[in-house]
Length: 592
Image (cartoon, rainbow, N blue to C red; front, side):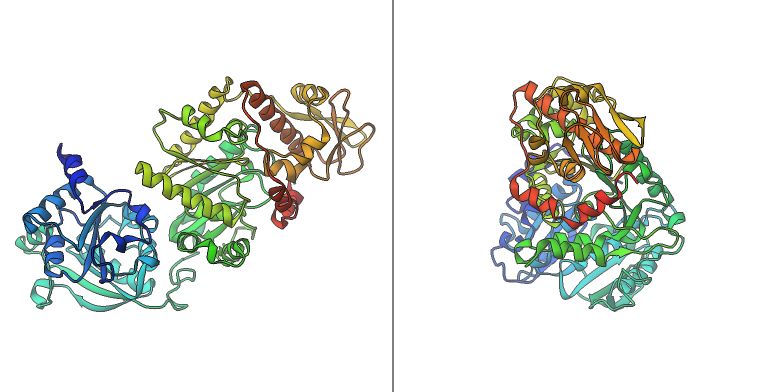
């Protein structure tokens, strides 16, 4: 039963010198919280009221302890129990912090050097109700612990639940942990030391036996590696992941159905699946193409997340190459699913929540393509019920993932919440959540708010189409586009050499120009007098170019009307995109 919130919780925590706020900001620096940072460091996950925690810390002054829980009131009780144990003094070797164990990878890393983890009487989460992935000993958690435990580090685990203990023994073996001590009746075994918690005393009083094990982290072998059948069962893939693949499809088609949210193959979506896997839109495909069995690739997101969360990009000789190699190595084959290339932005999808929607929305890009991005968003989202962040323009790929990682940590440290919306300057918007409906809600709400900030409404983007004019040619069917191109305000040089975002370069470079007469095959030509764009290419590709042109001009006009400063990509970014093999691949598939 969840403890009721106490009115003295926040004052108690605020006054406590050993309660750590913004825990993710200490990632890699936890030892600095202690008077003697060189001593061994142990971590208790789910410390509860801290009864056994405090006694353990008091009895072992030469060991530093971090005790975490996700409930602040419980942590405040822990602080009270610590005050009673230490009387007027404060412990030098114990700190408490509020941490969601499901996202523990954001809080600890290998640099912290944690030698032991204690997990005592966690929620057993009924396997029949399919909640077992929330178990603190589930493989998705054990692989996170491997990311920050020292070599040979240990997990000490206690429970009164038979099913959980049986499953945990299996989990340990599958994740490269060697069980070095095991008992089904801790109190009869004579094992010491054993610091008894409040729950433990209650269970023993009821006559229950306490299960206990110690598991030592060993190097992974082929039989234990989660990328093999030992940890990730690829059989019955579609059946086992049906609910999340259906949600993934719903998010993708909802966002992808609108030309004001994505143009052509722009944007991408993803969903975390069972066994540490992630479905992500395949490069070159449109969001509206995605179905539960097509148009996406599957990756081991836990391995990819581990790379990005635990790597300093400054140590990599070639950041993009390293990121690309990680994505390639962790792409998985699924029987019945075409082998496709994952989006180059798979990295940032791996470090975010269960469902991720990244769009190139014209409304979000009103802010993202303004030099005043941050100030615009601060006002527009001032009363939003979610937090947000933003990153300066970074080339798509590994560097962008590292930039988003750092921004997520910054926002969480400042607000106590992960940003649900992330703006990428001269690029687009990311919305993410563990709930698919919340992911879509945040995406829509951000676009609504930014549109209103510019005096327009979400949905006011002009309708864009192409019409067959015979002789294998098509013309853009959009009065707004023709009017703007005929105005003389937008030159060919501006459209091709001062791009607002990558898709403008990808879809227009080498294809679009001003002129008269019939365009060559594969080309699009705009008559500067009438603003009519004629295409000598398949209708689907013509549609992509027409949508891209309309989006660029729509954004330019709205920013101009509000008096903001247009932000364009720099020369280095243009060179990167122009020579980027992944974008050439995406362009080659556009409109197919």
